[in-house]
Length: 316
View 1 (cartoon, one colour):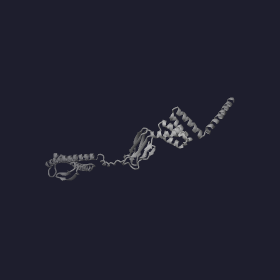
View 2: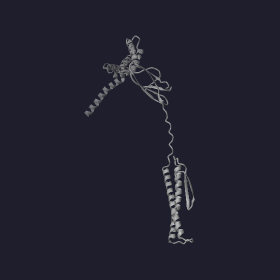
View 3: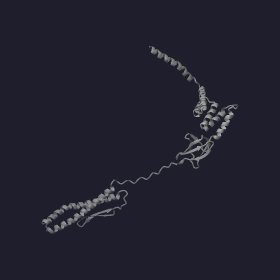
View 4: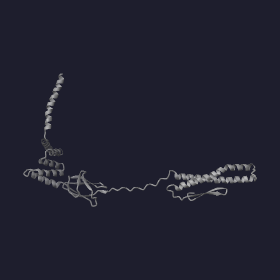
């Protein structure tokens, strides 16, 4: 119980002390906070820490605008190399200072000095540039072609773009007091590459190969028919010499007759295979895409002792 009571007492004491502190923080007015920031900025300037002081002066000016704060902000910005901002802020301070203010002559002298030190840049459009070209400085400030502007010393990037053109980027470096005029234009127009003509339709897979194979089969068939025909002629001679007109044959004539009958299917099969093979092969080879061969003409007919096949033109 004693420990619980002590804990409650400590919590109550903390609340009592924290309450006034929180109330004090919330009761600080904008003017008080501006004054506190101004004094902190002055202390940072005395320590030589202008980088820390400038944001304090800027925030103080936002909370409670005053020409004295602008004078200190201008001095701070000059130390860190922001001559353009320093020059603009001291011009604003001069406009706000009373005519009898002792700081006015010093401010005017400082404004003149900064005005001589601030670089000036004039950007013009090159002859032939599209009239609709837009000029952008450091990716943020839009420029009017031919109008001088003040910039901080250092490097700056100028972007020029127009509809249908490529954006051009130009880097320019200015020193204190330097005056530069440059001409810019967007890069050449974006052109669409011409559409290449469609490739010729590919030939059917193996079309020409199949044609050559079919033609080869045709040649083999014709060769078989010719050879078989010669054999049949020999068999016929044997039959004629060993058989009488009534077809009564001795053993040799009988064997030749039977052998000839067995060769007849081979003979006619050779002619058929040869004719079909040559016809199909010639047609495939002469009609396949990209073929420059002359058209072949296939002629079939009868010849003494059998059938005949002739091919003119083509590949044979």
